[in-house]
Image (cartoon, rainbow, N blue to C red; front, side, top):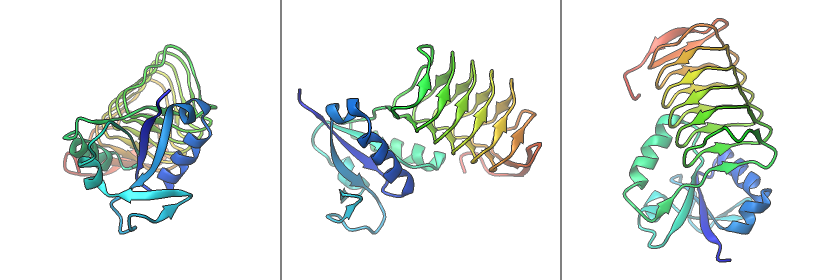
Length: 220
């Protein structure tokens, strides 16, 4: 079997964690040849990070002449969306969904392209994830949850059933959302917050209960 080539976009802490998780998934190591990292930081091409070479920057991907699988390892939802929109000009790039080997999920869970589901997370039944959703370490997702594209859950988030989370929302470490609530598009929820009421779009909310403390321009 010919292995597909794969790179990690983002060589920061999360990118290194994802690269390690991929190395532990036998089905992925059998299917993919990992080439290394791509990163726009000053890290020079040719250096190694955790045993994998830095291949170049985003421009390297845009000009890559062959079929290539890319894992976008950027936690910030809005930046992740911007990067994908830029990369979409190269039709040879594809975006596999990465699911760590001890994640538990039912056959009624659906995943969009480019999702990353990290170790020890649980997704129960009738959960719908859009494209490029990141669910970090040790999260739980209850029944009938719907997440739009580019949502980010940081570690140990608990989402109860029948919750809807809008595009580019970010849920901070250890926050909790009770059942039947809505989190608006591009809203950021602070670490440890408890969501007991719907939250509007384009705000930052903190506390228990979580309340908006500021609003920001749409898409910012």
